[in-house]
Image 1 (cartoon, rainbow, N blue to C red):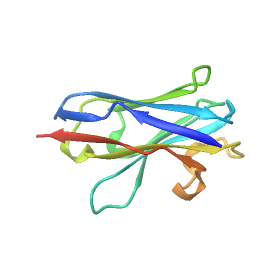
Image 2: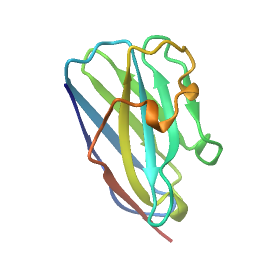
Image 3: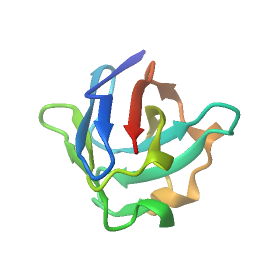
Image 4: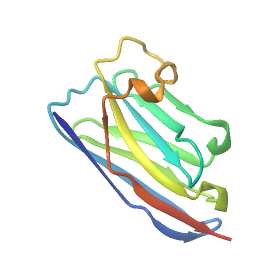
Length: 128
């Protein structure tokens, strides 16, 4: 069993920054895929970024490229999504998730349904 706990969300003005953290505990190895997703009211959950912790390869959805940065510290079992230059359209609940023992090196190959464990989410609200 793996537990994921997100933190760092909040209310920020457009152009501001937030640092989201995902603390992992339980039976988790250092070879997995960490994904960050978000879901705005009335919309489907969408992938924002992911990282393969073994290869450190990353992926970002086009709308956040150059603004968000994903990182992973296996020693601390902590994964971070740095959000810069935030826009009102970034407002959503942000979730981290883990796919255990990945067979594919490119984390973008994994769909939402491929992730094994999810955090409870953290609200990010960006005011204009």
